[in-house]
Amino acid sequence: MQVGDRVRVNTSVVIYHHPKHRGQATDIQNQEGIIDKIATEWKGRPVSANFPLVVKFDLDKLRAHMRSDELEVI
Image (cartoon, rainbow, N blue to C red):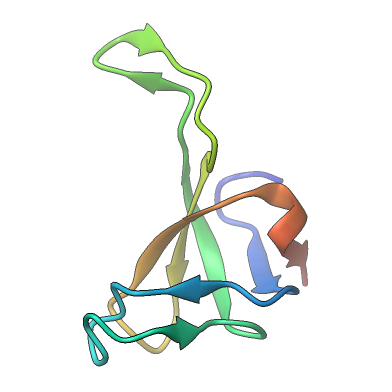
């Protein structure tokens, strides 16, 4: 997966930081978005992030860190 790829969440992922439902459990399965960034370094030092893909979702002002096995390229 590359920055700019269109992706869809293909598994059940529950988040609690959705802008419209802050603090409530929200499942984002089947949501579509674009890979915004891949976390490989922080302050110039390499990191091995558990959730390296930052996905920006279309309809909401929502960004979430995801794993590659939770996404599919569309």
